[in-house]
Structure formats: structure tokens, C-alpha cells
Length: 217
Image 1 (cartoon, rainbow, N blue to C red):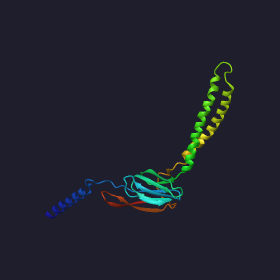
Image 2 (image 1 turned 90 degrees about the vertical axis):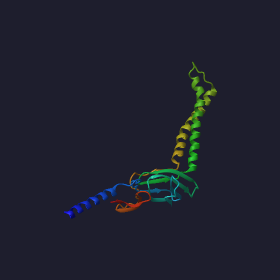
Image 3 (image 1 turned 135 degrees about the vertical axis):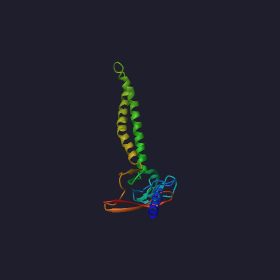
Image 4 (image 1 turned 30 degrees about the vertical axis):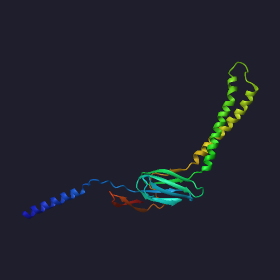
């Protein structure tokens, strides 16, 4: 009887100890799993991704990046070795994703801006030249002068030129800007092979590390 009582007491003690061990200690944080990210860029583009808090870069590559990192805010730095252009973009990683980085063309962008502004100015100039003839048409009879009619003819030319140049210029300006485009919201796997197993290191607390796995079939 004494042995049975002792065994019950020992079992209760072990269960209580296990229940206590399963309680998260103070300061414990849920594990944060890594995101798999790939970035496609031009072969001449050198890329570097750094956390926004100033920590060392999580990847440094040319033309194509493929890396694992914790979700958070980052800055993408790029250098185009063909043109020497340097760019930086804010990048917020929430989950595994694929991106396409377009360096853009500063020369075409500048030309588009000039054409867009010039076209807009031509439209305004055309309206100013046509204005007197429009007001003259409001009076009784023919109040317009020869000079007003000639100016209106020139104004029509400015309007037509501006109507053509303005959309072309602003389209060039917008489509030649550098941008980082997200391709999907799913896995950032870069291979067509579907049967794969990926392992990564994940944080499990303050300074703790563990293993995380992603499978696709």
C-alpha cells in the first residue's frame, strides 16, 4: 500500500513538472519563419539587400538574387555597371515572393519628361492663340481681325502638336522609371522542378535557432 501511494505521488510530481516545463518562460517569442525571396534583374545590375535597421546585407549578387531572410523592412541597393546609375528602394518582405527589378532608362525618362512638358506648354499656347478668335465670334457680326484668324490657325497647330506629344512624353517618363515589381504572392522557388525540399534556419526566441522546412510536390 505504501509502495502504491509512493508511485502515485511520484507520478503526480512528474506530471506537474512536465506541465510547468511546457509553460512559456517570460520573454519568450513565437518563432519567426524565414521567407524565400528571389529577385530577377539585368545582368549588369549589382544588387544588395540590407535590413532597414542598418544590419549587414542579407544578400549581395549580380543579375539574380535568391536568398532566405526574416520578414521585415529592407532596402534594395542597385548599381548598373553599364550606365553607372545607383538606385535604392524600400522593400517590405512579408512572405516568400519573386520580384523583378527594372533599372529603367534615365535618358529616355528625361526625354519623356521634356516632351511631356513641351506638349503641355504647346496646348496652353494654342489655347491662348485661339482665345481672341473665340471671343470675337461672340459679338454680333464678324468682329474678328485678320491677325486673330492667323493666330488661331497657328494655335490649332500648337494644339494638335501638344495633343500628340503630351501623352507620348508622359508615357515615356512613366514606363522608363526604375521599379521593383512583385511577380506573385506564393513561393519564390526559381526552378521548374516541383519535387523539392528546402531547409532553413529560423529564430525560436532570444538568440535561439531552429530548423524550418518547405516542401513542394
